[in-house]
Length: 239
Ligand code: SAM
Image 1 (cartoon, rainbow, N blue to C red):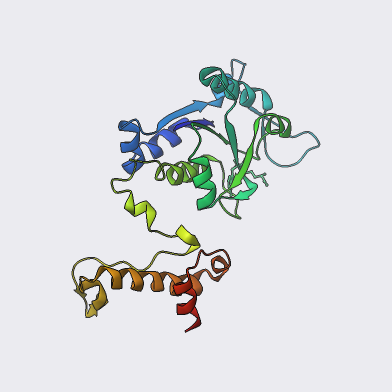
Image 2: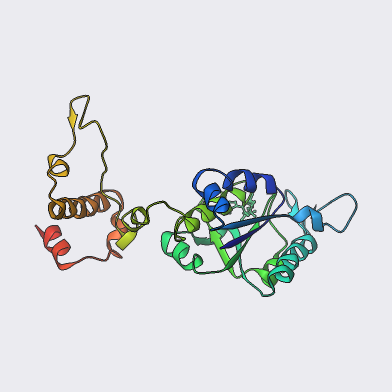
């Protein structure tokens, strides 16, 4: 997977993504990060990339030219028009199934806005996907781009040491993950559920599935409508 991030703050992206699991994935060449400074495409000696909005209003807007030219540099490099994700609070809210869909691509372009956003014309010309990370407004698209890169990367084979850990976790089957415990088996009088020490894998699996269901009903009842439930799950819920 090749990530091309169009941003005014490339160091924020490279410092963030070059850390921990995604950093190791870059070292192993499982993912490739190309943080492109939009300012390098300003076309003027002052490096100006923003201007006042037509019609008045607060703040500055990123101009279309530098954004378009930075995008063109990616198209020229890879030889085709890839999906371009504009991080915006006005987009579809990011979720795990969107991450699974994006993980199938060979190249992804992330366009990070700053200030009051970006001139609408260039967005109409290049953006294929408008994505938000939630109903709140951040100062820029860099953190949202990193959230997406992190989520997508862990779906790429080999990025997580143990592929099983991506298989059984929250949002698989649209259920939240069951509670997890590690040593010691007693912590300040609180004991690990005895079934987890039983060594009976079938019973542990059944308990975990039931805990996932209980937790999802309690914490995220909205997910239950979309949950992939088996006949046994339904029997358990009806009990
Ligand atoms: N004026 C814009 C509006 O009201 O929709 C908000 C601009 S925001 C201050 C600056 C940039 O931060 C946006 O262009 C976008 O790239 C990014 N951004 C802010 N909140 C975001 C969110 N919830 N999800 C994704 N990107 C966001």
